Length: 334
Length: 290
Image (cartoon, rainbow over all chains, first blue to last red; front, top):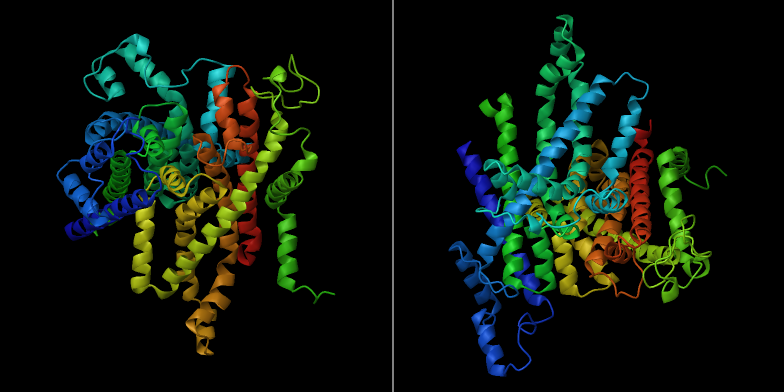
């Protein structure tokens, strides 16, 4: 077990190193000089050279890479060219916004997807039951980008009840000690602030969560269908359990493992989706910031953010592996 | 007559025509293709012609609509329907080119990894894993920023990102096929490994590959729209659905239809590619068909 864990950690490190190399090389072959856009019109060649040296852009590529890698291992991600601030500091400020959004979307998707799957299993002998599959199939085909704008039209124009952008209404003038606005406002019992943060989160959360909910429904429904004809469920039925209790107590427990494994992979896709969804709703997370960083050719910031995303994906995958092992007695003991 | 066309081809075609998903999805894509090719003749107006007096006119049937502008106009008075029709050109170009390229790249690497295994598989699989650690949208934005805006860059970016989808599936398929009796037979009669790969295994993974290509086309259309929305795809004087969405987002409260029209077009196109892919997966596979 431990040797497997060590092996996984080494693999993760190799993957992250690969990500780092690719981003680094990509950004260095990119046309366009990041220094060119930050100099003032009156800058002398000496000023430009000094600036270049300040950002370490005057040395050879391998040197730049190893200096960058060494600094990162020391916890120094460099200085953002466009924001003139420590990259690690900015990322620490913005990452919690993305994490809150991603986990809220995951929770929403798991609840909705699970509820629909259970409901579909309960009513599987209705004549209208295939309708659920049809609607779910439609939801499977629609990606977050389309959902986001459909929601903008629905809740921003036709039924204008939700804010279209941002994370919290600035006029509320709420102050937060941590960047975890939702968790902090809930923990300190400031429910008005929490409600406002949630209102800002609803549309991006739906856009990210609805496609995942459809996937969860499909996989869980299939597992439940298989579980419902197993001997232990038939036995429980003979004991006189109601259909709802059969599904929830007997079948669900055994059907959840495949869904869990799949949800993990899909959750990384959801995190990837935050990039465009945050952009659409001007939500101040790392995804939105990454788009700006690319547009501004802010090399240190792009490099830092890509590594954060890569690390996030790897951590999620490992966590899911652990969860799958932990919930499956056969894997745990074997 | 019956021998002019091999039987498996006519059987496959018949299965496709009988599948409602193939007919519905494929039908819509064909319709779109006709619109894209015939855009100069079919679009009612010049998609770039501005008319500031007719700015933000609502679609037909709404108060204030102008005759001749079925889907209304945008803030510059350009005809939304004409821009929608012209926008299908970029969408379909990117869909076909990017999906084909991604499939060629991914299938080739998948075949190699699944057939040779060992260190070849180790390297390709590690590459896939590294690729999967990138948020695809961020990587596509990054690539287009590196290559420079333009349809060619968008196509290249999508192919470079999405080859992994093909590689993973084709690798697994190839591993399965490599164990089958017909491969053993082909090797026994003296086929070289490359011959087995191209003449025996490739045709057998084709149904899966074609279905994946159709799904990938839907993805490519979305990615192009995302890149246009961010402002990185093509120059702003070429109408694209993503560009129209970006514009519609800005004048949301004056003219919702400028956003709604391209969004619905995008939705129907993605749905059509999905239906077509699902239908093809079933009707191209002789085993699943039965």
